[in-house]
Amino acid sequence: MLKFIPFQKAHVDQAAHLLSAQFVRLRTDHPLLPQRTEEPSVAGGFLNVLYAKETCRGIVMLENDEMQGFLLGTYGDNQFFGEYVLVPFGGIAIASGRGAEPLAMMYVAAGKRWVNEGVLNHYLVLPALPDWLEMAFSLSFGKEQAYAITSM
Image (cartoon, rainbow, N blue to C red; front, side, top):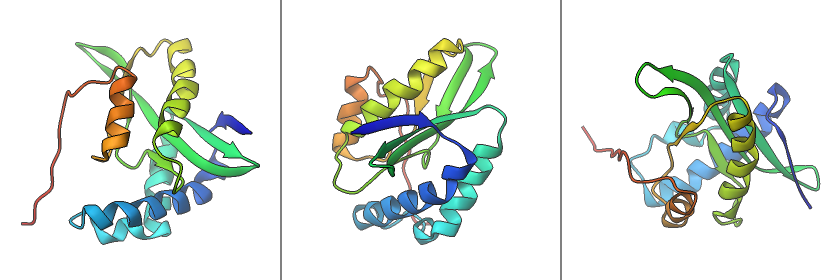
């Protein structure tokens, strides 16, 4: 049975392993992503910096007390658009073989808290995985921005 709990500092190490394993899979199709992202220590450093922000909010998805995914973002404020939450690239990881459905389930769980706290603008930066993008579009996220990488 799946359980959703708030992301806490104690989750960083396990989340780092999940994120680095996800980058190993991503680099198969996107080899220009930095190889260092496959290292749990680098992923952990990124997550520690993200979590250290006072406005960090997120969710952990557990099955049988094992982390199967996480979604982590930070609040910000824009003079024009108002308050928002941004889930950066690397702020979402899903265990191998689970597909994109956990993305929707984690967003529903995290989004409820964000809305309850008055943050109505939500932004996700996702890898260009067709099933993830399709899931994001089904949640009413649109094509607002696109990023690319190239060798210099």
